[in-house]
Image 1 (spheres, one colour):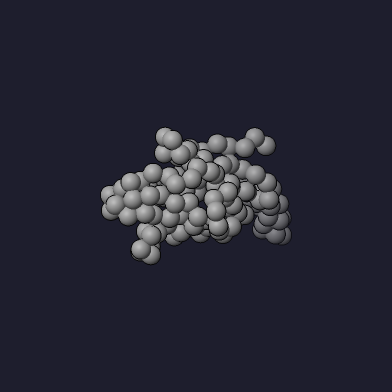
Image 2 (tube, one colour):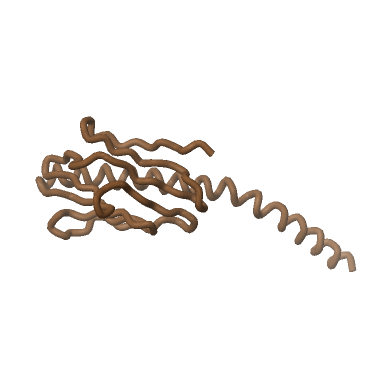
Length: 136
């Protein structure tokens, strides 16, 4: 009988503790994904410059793919569960010229659990990639 009571108490404690622990884990996963987006966009830019060939980043709601204009894939990444992406690039495609310059500035919007979470901003003049978090 004592074991049954102990297991019931343990079950109640776990049902309270697990949802509370998932918040920080989800936040860490979101931030890691944002760092990966920035790294992969910067990688596309450096590959375009190094190979003297245009590179593209195609953004879809479930992730993105990085490739050279010749079609050679460089990276492909799926968004974690609950994360959706959007962009204001024509046809969801960010382009880097053979000189590594961004062809058109814009943003990749990151939505987490149905709410705006952050923007990855690409600036034409500086070629800089930065993250801006959306206030809750």
